[in-house]
Length: 262
View 1 (cartoon, rainbow, N blue to C red):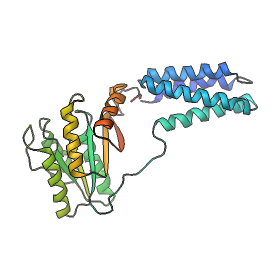
View 2: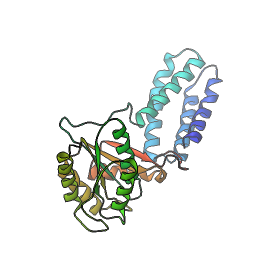
View 3: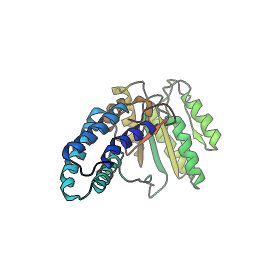
View 4: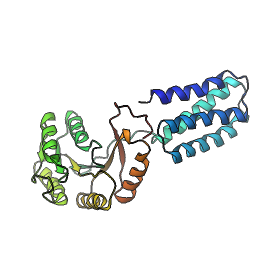
């Protein structure tokens, strides 16, 4: 997914490395090419413009302190790499575990983003680490969502708490709350709560997700987003940030033909 973007960014730097001494216009031209590459990769306009502005300001300040063209080009390359890393969130952080189990992880996002599949993958990952996760079926809206979670849970050998059949039947907040209590009674040290999504951001979705959040007080809320939605990812993330809040973002379907901008 990132091959085309990486190739274009590398191409933008190729001309810099061949110059004896860099000028301000050389840097501006390179940054403009990188900005264009980001936009072609479906990076949101506000993100690409902010990136270009920060890099240009820092590069222009840095340029007079550098001696040779090679050193200048490498310094600008390092600066771009640092800024791209910052855009992606900087350093890695592990999931926060509760001091008193169970650790509760809530998954939120639009319908079709891949929350249910991610729930099973997370459960298997932590099960393999020696934890005792349980999945909670709080998506009672999407047809067969409960059944799907039961199937993927069985496939990874992780139990599923699903007291309601779903398909529009049951109270997702009550299920989430009861799932936490059940996990405590059975000594599970981790609970992964699968919640409902919608085809688009709406008040009903946010109200339900917020109610579940308030009921279970999760240690982590993970916003799950389909990498193929491109620039819409920013708008959707902002809506969830403001309406529900989240601690981390999970990009799904990275093996697809998306251009990486999300």
